[in-house]
Length: 203
Image 1: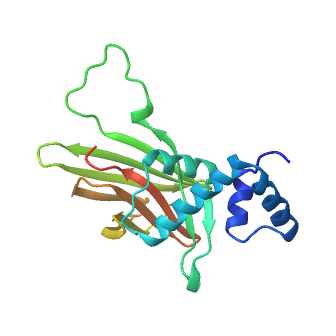
Image 2: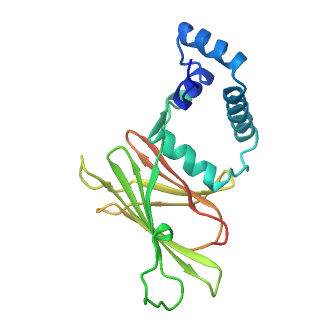
Image 3: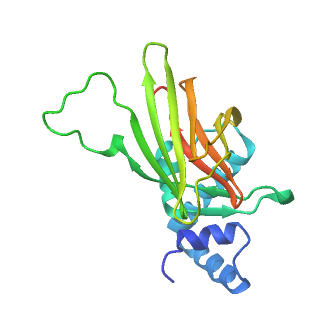
């Protein structure tokens, strides 16, 4: 048997694998140290995230995971919103600076996140004088009209710090909030879209 795919490993750990798939995977794990080590790392990470709401996994790990499973949809216990993790598809920090271009101060950071047919466009402007940021964005979809009056939240260290709603064209804004590591979530009828590490620490 070839190495276990990440998708099969997650399905097994989540109890979604069939009996045949379980037996095959368990047999492979007993003889393959590499796949066994990967499974232990996944289990350790999931346990820590579940037990410590303040735990912030490394941003590289978050982006790697999001890239693997975009979009992840998880049913929410108790009939609440299901969770959808958006994938970062564009970041101006990853784009090279044009030769000969000079800027005054730090330019705004532009990010584009995607979950299915929904895009969330985000611009972050840093105010060095008072160590704050302004975060503005827009929720767009290729399949429906603008998302009007949609709840948007900024979460830090497991706590929702700021709330707002979109306007008639899906735009939202968080003005001059303290610099921190923030996750942003958008509550849509089909589920809650989460943007991990939309801003990190004092960057």
